[in-house]
Length: 393
Image (cartoon, rainbow, N blue to C red; front, side):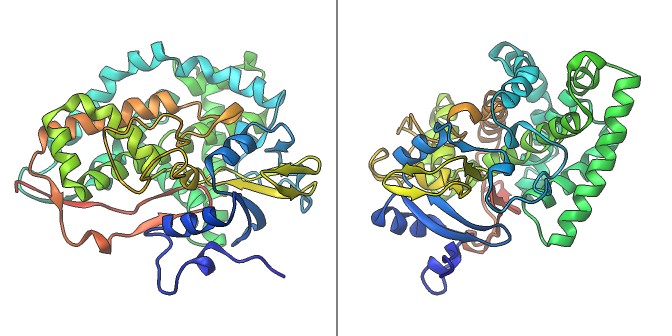
Protein backbone atom coordinates (compact mmCIF):
# COMPACT_ATOMS: atom_id res chain seq x y z
CA UNK A 1 0.00 0.00 0.00
CA UNK A 2 1.31 3.45 -0.91
CA UNK A 3 2.29 5.63 2.04
CA UNK A 4 0.33 8.88 2.58
CA UNK A 5 1.69 12.31 1.79
CA UNK A 6 1.85 14.93 4.54
CA UNK A 7 -0.93 16.77 2.74
CA UNK A 8 -3.12 13.68 2.99
CA UNK A 9 -2.36 13.47 6.70
CA UNK A 10 -3.50 17.05 7.28
CA UNK A 11 -7.06 17.71 8.49
CA UNK A 12 -9.53 18.46 5.73
CA UNK A 13 -9.09 21.99 4.42
CA UNK A 14 -5.87 22.61 6.34
CA UNK A 15 -3.16 24.43 4.35
CA UNK A 16 0.01 22.44 4.99
CA UNK A 17 2.31 25.11 3.54
CA UNK A 18 0.88 27.82 5.81
CA UNK A 19 1.09 25.71 8.97
CA UNK A 20 2.58 22.21 8.86
CA UNK A 21 3.15 22.00 12.61
CA UNK A 22 -0.17 20.40 13.67
CA UNK A 23 0.56 17.53 11.28
CA UNK A 24 4.03 17.06 12.77
CA UNK A 25 2.58 17.17 16.29
CA UNK A 26 0.04 14.48 15.41
CA UNK A 27 2.78 12.28 13.96
CA UNK A 28 4.98 12.72 17.05
CA UNK A 29 2.22 11.36 19.27
CA UNK A 30 2.24 8.15 17.21
CA UNK A 31 6.00 7.65 17.14
CA UNK A 32 9.34 9.10 16.07
CA UNK A 33 9.55 7.64 12.53
CA UNK A 34 6.85 7.35 9.85
CA UNK A 35 6.53 6.12 6.28
CA UNK A 36 5.40 8.95 3.99
CA UNK A 37 5.28 9.72 0.28
CA UNK A 38 7.19 12.76 -0.94
CA UNK A 39 5.63 13.89 -4.24
CA UNK A 40 8.16 13.75 -7.04
CA UNK A 41 10.68 11.79 -4.96
CA UNK A 42 8.95 8.63 -3.72
CA UNK A 43 8.48 7.05 -0.32
CA UNK A 44 10.78 7.63 2.63
CA UNK A 45 10.99 7.33 6.40
CA UNK A 46 10.28 10.72 8.00
CA UNK A 47 11.87 11.42 11.40
CA UNK A 48 9.85 13.83 13.56
CA UNK A 49 11.30 13.76 17.12
CA UNK A 50 14.47 15.46 18.29
CA UNK A 51 16.16 12.39 19.81
CA UNK A 52 15.52 10.28 16.74
CA UNK A 53 16.61 13.17 14.50
CA UNK A 54 19.97 13.53 16.26
CA UNK A 55 20.46 9.76 16.11
CA UNK A 56 19.73 9.70 12.37
CA UNK A 57 21.97 12.67 11.64
CA UNK A 58 24.96 11.00 13.31
CA UNK A 59 24.41 7.41 12.14
CA UNK A 60 27.23 6.52 9.69
CA UNK A 61 25.00 3.87 8.11
CA UNK A 62 22.76 6.59 6.69
CA UNK A 63 24.56 8.00 3.66
CA UNK A 64 23.95 11.14 1.62
CA UNK A 65 25.21 9.65 -1.64
CA UNK A 66 22.21 8.79 -3.82
CA UNK A 67 23.98 5.69 -5.10
CA UNK A 68 23.03 3.95 -1.83
CA UNK A 69 19.37 4.33 -2.74
CA UNK A 70 17.59 1.11 -3.72
CA UNK A 71 15.96 3.00 -6.61
CA UNK A 72 19.18 4.63 -7.90
CA UNK A 73 19.84 4.23 -11.61
CA UNK A 74 21.71 7.38 -12.68
CA UNK A 75 23.25 10.46 -11.07
CA UNK A 76 20.22 12.49 -12.16
CA UNK A 77 19.64 13.37 -8.52
CA UNK A 78 22.61 15.75 -8.59
CA UNK A 79 21.19 19.11 -9.58
CA UNK A 80 24.42 20.80 -10.62
CA UNK A 81 27.68 18.86 -10.35
CA UNK A 82 28.52 16.96 -7.17
CA UNK A 83 28.67 18.70 -3.83
CA UNK A 84 29.15 18.19 -0.10
CA UNK A 85 25.44 17.72 0.53
CA UNK A 86 25.42 14.67 -1.72
CA UNK A 87 28.61 13.02 -0.48
CA UNK A 88 29.97 11.12 2.50
CA UNK A 89 33.41 10.82 4.13
CA UNK A 90 36.13 10.79 2.99
CA UNK A 91 34.88 12.71 -0.06
CA UNK A 92 32.74 15.01 2.05
CA UNK A 93 35.63 15.66 4.44
CA UNK A 94 37.92 16.68 1.60
CA UNK A 95 35.36 18.99 -0.01
CA UNK A 96 34.36 20.65 3.25
CA UNK A 97 37.96 21.26 4.24
CA UNK A 98 38.50 23.28 1.05
CA UNK A 99 35.99 25.95 2.10
CA UNK A 100 35.70 25.69 5.88
CA UNK A 101 38.43 28.29 6.40
CA UNK A 102 36.25 30.91 4.72
CA UNK A 103 33.52 30.55 7.37
CA UNK A 104 35.51 30.80 10.60
CA UNK A 105 34.46 33.29 13.31
CA UNK A 106 37.36 35.54 12.34
CA UNK A 107 36.38 35.60 8.67
CA UNK A 108 32.74 36.28 9.53
CA UNK A 109 33.74 39.10 11.90
CA UNK A 110 35.67 40.69 9.03
CA UNK A 111 32.54 40.55 6.85
CA UNK A 112 30.25 42.24 9.40
CA UNK A 113 31.03 45.88 8.44
CA UNK A 114 30.21 45.12 4.81
CA UNK A 115 26.98 43.35 5.79
CA UNK A 116 25.97 46.33 7.94
CA UNK A 117 26.71 48.71 5.05
CA UNK A 118 24.50 46.78 2.62
CA UNK A 119 21.68 46.48 5.19
CA UNK A 120 21.84 50.21 5.97
CA UNK A 121 21.62 51.08 2.26
CA UNK A 122 18.59 48.84 1.84
CA UNK A 123 16.92 50.37 4.89
CA UNK A 124 17.48 53.86 3.52
CA UNK A 125 15.56 52.86 0.40
CA UNK A 126 12.53 51.65 2.39
CA UNK A 127 9.65 54.13 2.71
CA UNK A 128 9.14 55.99 5.98
CA UNK A 129 5.40 55.94 5.30
CA UNK A 130 3.31 53.48 3.32
CA UNK A 131 3.97 49.82 2.50
CA UNK A 132 6.73 47.68 1.04
CA UNK A 133 7.46 43.99 0.48
CA UNK A 134 10.14 43.17 3.02
CA UNK A 135 11.25 40.07 1.13
CA UNK A 136 12.09 41.69 -2.21
CA UNK A 137 13.24 44.98 -0.70
CA UNK A 138 15.31 43.76 2.26
CA UNK A 139 15.41 40.05 3.21
CA UNK A 140 16.39 38.92 -0.29
CA UNK A 141 18.89 41.50 -1.61
CA UNK A 142 21.01 41.48 1.56
CA UNK A 143 22.12 37.81 1.55
CA UNK A 144 22.28 37.77 -2.25
CA UNK A 145 24.74 40.68 -2.18
CA UNK A 146 26.80 39.11 0.61
CA UNK A 147 27.22 35.64 -0.91
CA UNK A 148 27.77 37.00 -4.43
CA UNK A 149 30.47 39.37 -3.16
CA UNK A 150 32.11 36.49 -1.29
CA UNK A 151 32.03 34.19 -4.30
CA UNK A 152 32.77 36.84 -6.89
CA UNK A 153 29.51 36.75 -8.87
CA UNK A 154 29.14 39.86 -11.07
CA UNK A 155 26.37 42.25 -10.01
CA UNK A 156 24.64 41.89 -13.39
CA UNK A 157 24.13 38.14 -12.86
CA UNK A 158 22.74 38.23 -9.32
CA UNK A 159 19.02 38.57 -9.98
CA UNK A 160 18.94 35.73 -12.49
CA UNK A 161 21.07 33.54 -10.20
CA UNK A 162 18.43 33.88 -7.51
CA UNK A 163 15.64 33.09 -9.97
CA UNK A 164 17.38 29.88 -11.02
CA UNK A 165 18.27 28.78 -7.49
CA UNK A 166 14.77 29.52 -6.22
CA UNK A 167 13.30 27.35 -8.95
CA UNK A 168 15.63 24.50 -8.05
CA UNK A 169 14.94 24.49 -4.30
CA UNK A 170 11.19 25.16 -4.63
CA UNK A 171 10.24 23.95 -8.14
CA UNK A 172 7.12 25.26 -9.82
CA UNK A 173 7.24 22.37 -12.32
CA UNK A 174 9.65 19.63 -13.41
CA UNK A 175 10.13 21.38 -16.73
CA UNK A 176 10.95 24.74 -15.13
CA UNK A 177 13.38 23.09 -12.71
CA UNK A 178 15.16 21.30 -15.57
CA UNK A 179 15.48 24.55 -17.50
CA UNK A 180 16.80 26.38 -14.43
CA UNK A 181 19.34 23.62 -13.80
CA UNK A 182 20.62 23.73 -17.38
CA UNK A 183 20.87 27.52 -17.46
CA UNK A 184 22.54 27.74 -14.05
CA UNK A 185 25.03 25.02 -15.01
CA UNK A 186 25.96 26.89 -18.19
CA UNK A 187 26.37 30.17 -16.34
CA UNK A 188 28.45 28.67 -13.53
CA UNK A 189 30.62 26.85 -16.06
CA UNK A 190 31.35 30.13 -17.81
CA UNK A 191 31.96 31.92 -14.51
CA UNK A 192 34.33 29.31 -13.06
CA UNK A 193 36.25 29.13 -16.33
CA UNK A 194 36.69 32.89 -16.26
CA UNK A 195 37.86 32.76 -12.63
CA UNK A 196 40.43 30.09 -13.49
CA UNK A 197 41.90 32.13 -16.35
CA UNK A 198 41.66 35.54 -14.65
CA UNK A 199 41.94 34.89 -10.89
CA UNK A 200 40.97 37.48 -8.28
CA UNK A 201 40.64 37.51 -4.48
CA UNK A 202 37.23 35.83 -4.28
CA UNK A 203 36.29 32.40 -2.94
CA UNK A 204 35.19 31.11 -6.32
CA UNK A 205 38.55 32.09 -7.80
CA UNK A 206 40.33 30.13 -5.05
CA UNK A 207 38.22 27.08 -5.82
CA UNK A 208 38.77 27.39 -9.57
CA UNK A 209 42.55 27.54 -9.15
CA UNK A 210 44.47 24.59 -10.56
CA UNK A 211 45.83 23.65 -7.15
CA UNK A 212 42.46 23.38 -5.39
CA UNK A 213 42.13 19.69 -6.19
CA UNK A 214 38.55 20.04 -7.44
CA UNK A 215 37.43 18.24 -10.56
CA UNK A 216 35.07 19.94 -13.03
CA UNK A 217 31.90 18.40 -11.59
CA UNK A 218 33.05 19.07 -8.03
CA UNK A 219 33.81 22.72 -8.82
CA UNK A 220 30.37 23.18 -10.34
CA UNK A 221 28.75 21.44 -7.39
CA UNK A 222 30.64 23.54 -4.87
CA UNK A 223 29.78 26.78 -6.64
CA UNK A 224 26.13 25.73 -6.86
CA UNK A 225 25.85 24.70 -3.23
CA UNK A 226 27.57 27.79 -1.84
CA UNK A 227 25.49 30.11 -3.99
CA UNK A 228 22.13 28.49 -3.26
CA UNK A 229 22.66 27.54 0.38
CA UNK A 230 24.45 30.83 0.95
CA UNK A 231 21.37 32.95 0.41
CA UNK A 232 18.09 31.01 0.06
CA UNK A 233 17.92 29.93 3.70
CA UNK A 234 18.97 33.35 5.01
CA UNK A 235 16.24 35.09 3.01
CA UNK A 236 13.70 32.82 4.72
CA UNK A 237 15.34 33.26 8.13
CA UNK A 238 15.19 37.07 8.00
CA UNK A 239 11.64 37.29 6.67
CA UNK A 240 10.41 34.46 8.92
CA UNK A 241 11.84 36.15 12.02
CA UNK A 242 10.17 39.46 11.16
CA UNK A 243 6.90 37.62 10.52
CA UNK A 244 7.08 35.87 13.90
CA UNK A 245 7.76 39.17 15.68
CA UNK A 246 4.89 40.97 13.95
CA UNK A 247 2.60 38.06 14.83
CA UNK A 248 3.67 38.29 18.49
CA UNK A 249 3.46 42.00 19.43
CA UNK A 250 4.60 41.43 23.01
CA UNK A 251 7.81 39.81 21.78
CA UNK A 252 8.33 42.63 19.28
CA UNK A 253 7.89 45.18 22.07
CA UNK A 254 10.40 43.24 24.19
CA UNK A 255 12.94 43.38 21.38
CA UNK A 256 12.30 47.10 20.85
CA UNK A 257 13.06 47.66 24.51
CA UNK A 258 16.25 45.57 24.44
CA UNK A 259 18.03 45.12 21.11
CA UNK A 260 20.60 42.90 22.84
CA UNK A 261 17.94 40.18 22.44
CA UNK A 262 18.38 40.21 18.65
CA UNK A 263 20.57 37.11 18.60
CA UNK A 264 18.08 35.33 20.85
CA UNK A 265 15.29 36.27 18.44
CA UNK A 266 17.19 34.72 15.55
CA UNK A 267 17.83 31.50 17.52
CA UNK A 268 14.21 31.22 18.57
CA UNK A 269 13.14 31.82 14.98
CA UNK A 270 15.45 29.04 13.79
CA UNK A 271 13.69 26.71 16.21
CA UNK A 272 10.16 28.03 15.80
CA UNK A 273 10.05 28.35 12.03
CA UNK A 274 13.01 26.43 10.57
CA UNK A 275 13.88 27.79 7.09
CA UNK A 276 15.62 24.48 6.32
CA UNK A 277 12.49 22.47 6.92
CA UNK A 278 14.01 19.04 6.33
CA UNK A 279 17.31 17.47 5.40
CA UNK A 280 18.26 16.07 2.05
CA UNK A 281 17.44 12.38 1.74
CA UNK A 282 19.80 9.90 3.34
CA UNK A 283 19.96 6.27 2.31
CA UNK A 284 20.55 3.19 4.41
CA UNK A 285 23.81 1.53 3.40
CA UNK A 286 22.69 -1.53 5.38
CA UNK A 287 19.64 -2.59 7.39
CA UNK A 288 19.32 -0.69 10.66
CA UNK A 289 16.99 0.10 13.53
CA UNK A 290 16.07 3.77 13.95
CA UNK A 291 14.13 4.60 17.12
CA UNK A 292 12.42 1.20 17.01
CA UNK A 293 11.66 1.29 13.27
CA UNK A 294 13.32 -1.16 10.89
CA UNK A 295 14.97 0.58 7.95
CA UNK A 296 15.85 -1.70 5.04
CA UNK A 297 19.05 -1.30 3.03
CA UNK A 298 18.50 1.26 0.29
CA UNK A 299 15.54 2.94 2.02
CA UNK A 300 15.40 6.73 2.00
CA UNK A 301 15.28 8.64 5.31
CA UNK A 302 14.46 12.31 5.73
CA UNK A 303 14.78 14.23 8.99
CA UNK A 304 12.19 16.92 9.62
CA UNK A 305 14.26 19.60 11.34
CA UNK A 306 11.11 21.67 11.75
CA UNK A 307 9.26 18.89 13.56
CA UNK A 308 12.26 17.99 15.73
CA UNK A 309 12.72 21.61 16.83
CA UNK A 310 9.15 21.69 18.16
CA UNK A 311 9.44 18.46 20.11
CA UNK A 312 7.76 19.20 23.48
CA UNK A 313 10.07 16.76 25.29
CA UNK A 314 12.93 19.21 24.67
CA UNK A 315 11.16 22.53 24.12
CA UNK A 316 8.30 23.11 26.58
CA UNK A 317 5.25 24.79 25.04
CA UNK A 318 6.97 24.47 21.64
CA UNK A 319 4.35 26.38 19.64
CA UNK A 320 5.02 29.55 21.64
CA UNK A 321 7.47 32.08 20.16
CA UNK A 322 9.52 33.32 23.11
CA UNK A 323 12.70 35.42 22.93
CA UNK A 324 13.63 34.45 26.49
CA UNK A 325 13.56 30.71 25.75
CA UNK A 326 17.29 30.23 24.90
CA UNK A 327 16.55 27.20 22.68
CA UNK A 328 19.79 25.29 23.00
CA UNK A 329 19.79 22.14 20.92
CA UNK A 330 17.43 23.22 18.15
CA UNK A 331 18.19 21.65 14.78
CA UNK A 332 17.72 24.71 12.58
CA UNK A 333 21.16 24.21 11.04
CA UNK A 334 21.15 20.42 11.21
CA UNK A 335 23.51 18.30 13.27
CA UNK A 336 26.55 16.08 12.82
CA UNK A 337 28.93 15.98 9.85
CA UNK A 338 26.55 17.92 7.63
CA UNK A 339 25.82 20.69 10.13
CA UNK A 340 25.47 23.83 8.02
CA UNK A 341 28.92 25.18 7.15
CA UNK A 342 27.51 28.67 6.60
CA UNK A 343 25.67 28.85 9.93
CA UNK A 344 27.96 31.60 11.35
CA UNK A 345 27.42 33.73 8.24
CA UNK A 346 23.65 33.20 8.26
CA UNK A 347 23.48 34.11 11.95
CA UNK A 348 25.55 37.26 11.35
CA UNK A 349 23.42 38.39 8.41
CA UNK A 350 20.12 37.72 10.15
CA UNK A 351 21.20 39.35 13.40
CA UNK A 352 22.49 42.47 11.66
CA UNK A 353 19.44 42.70 9.40
CA UNK A 354 17.04 42.34 12.32
CA UNK A 355 18.86 44.70 14.68
CA UNK A 356 19.03 47.52 12.13
CA UNK A 357 15.46 46.99 10.94
CA UNK A 358 13.89 46.90 14.40
CA UNK A 359 15.97 49.83 15.57
CA UNK A 360 15.04 51.92 12.53
CA UNK A 361 11.40 50.98 11.88
CA UNK A 362 9.46 51.15 15.12
CA UNK A 363 6.11 51.65 13.40
CA UNK A 364 6.26 48.45 11.35
CA UNK A 365 3.17 46.22 11.07
CA UNK A 366 1.57 43.69 8.75
CA UNK A 367 0.10 45.35 5.65
CA UNK A 368 -3.10 43.36 5.30
CA UNK A 369 -4.24 40.07 6.77
CA UNK A 370 -1.23 37.86 7.61
CA UNK A 371 -3.45 34.81 7.13
CA UNK A 372 -3.42 35.58 3.41
CA UNK A 373 0.36 35.38 3.05
CA UNK A 374 1.78 32.72 0.74
CA UNK A 375 4.32 30.30 2.16
CA UNK A 376 6.44 28.54 -0.45
CA UNK A 377 7.61 25.08 0.49
CA UNK A 378 9.71 22.44 -1.22
CA UNK A 379 11.33 19.19 -0.17
CA UNK A 380 13.96 21.02 1.89
CA UNK A 381 12.99 24.66 2.43
CA UNK A 382 10.00 26.73 3.52
CA UNK A 383 9.63 30.50 3.45
CA UNK A 384 7.47 33.47 2.61
CA UNK A 385 6.99 34.44 -1.03
CA UNK A 386 6.53 38.02 0.11
CA UNK A 387 5.96 39.95 3.34
CA UNK A 388 4.09 43.22 2.81
CA UNK A 389 4.57 45.53 5.80
CA UNK A 390 3.45 49.07 6.58
CA UNK A 391 5.58 51.79 8.09
CA UNK A 392 4.85 54.90 10.09
CA UNK A 393 2.09 53.51 12.29
